[in-house]
Image 1 (cartoon, one colour):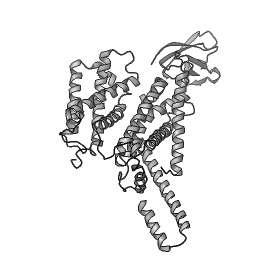
Image 2 (cartoon, one colour; image 1 turned 90 degrees about the vertical axis):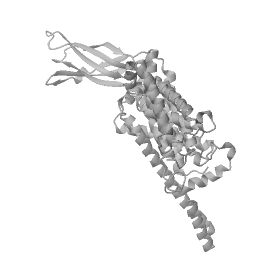
Image 3 (spheres, one colour; image 1 turned 60 degrees about the vertical axis):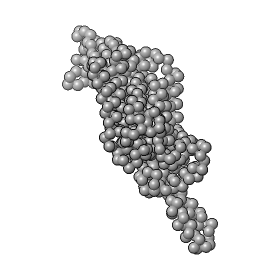
Image 4 (cartoon, each protein chain N blue to C red; image 1 turned 45 degrees about the vertical axis):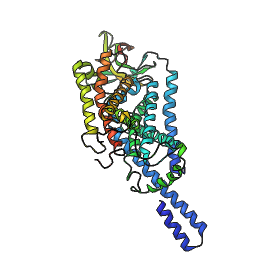
Length: 335
Length: 127
């Protein structure tokens, strides 16, 4: 975009006259291209939302929990989703600085698009129709918003063509807008520099754990596994979760994986980061189990069993999430 | 922060969608008194129809309570034929009965019910 407008400016200079009219056509061309860019962004958002959301759109338990869960639980889940979306777009935007206002608008976009995509998909699948009660329909949409919003968020950050560069179509004008914001250091949402701190990585890990475990949490399997597992089996699962995620992130040489040398923070060492990420994963599992009513009336041993079993899934999600953002951190060319 | 019209439309639609979903849930959460499931059955005897396997009497089951119910077992009783055949029982089980929603069912009898169909809830499970 910047290049295009410069070209037309030179063009205008050469002609030397009718400069005002030229500026008008320049602006309208600029707007048209801008609208095209927004349309492509929206398409990516819808596509990403569906790619991540479809497995749960086709999960029976998600439909039934829309009316089995209380409205308050749904509101809490939507709030958690919103926080994750804000955090993720703040961290993934580390390539270009953004103001808090832009960040908030982006996140509102994400949630809104997710709500509309969920509603349309549920209509298409016949899960919502003229006979559906309003509370039931709204509950179904609210639950599906969670995975779809993660997908929309990912589409905006990870799946965009060429990332921060000028690769996909009119990506350049994005940078143009952000140059102005870069001056405004005080209200900037990120520190820039492209180096994610230990807590930021942990946050992305938590979001990925939530997304990953959400695919399992509504089903009955974690409850069954938790009830039937004996204590030594659960202990083995805990050890396996920690050892496997430690190996995946630091020793398997995945793209985005990091070398075992630690940084300055306590959480920068492989073992501490892995244990911290595992703790976060267990917390996410417990939140999900509570959300889907799996902790109601359950004994402590059953709650612990379910949390550890679902935590196995969540820990892998957290590891995948840290790999996803790890590439921007210490290793760079490693993978 | 320059925005084009499509971004404004997307933002407006997004805000409306979020306010609609969250607003509805919050209002519903405030109005929710936690009343237990209240199954309400409306039998449509006039719509009864004959099949190769007896008569079916359609009915609509609603739930006036705030809580949903699972595994709702309904039993319908009605005199059939000219009355000499006595009272017959029919049974239906609903997997889920959401609050404020309606589920259509049908009770089966060997002959057309000749009197009122009375429906009772034999049991249900709370979520």
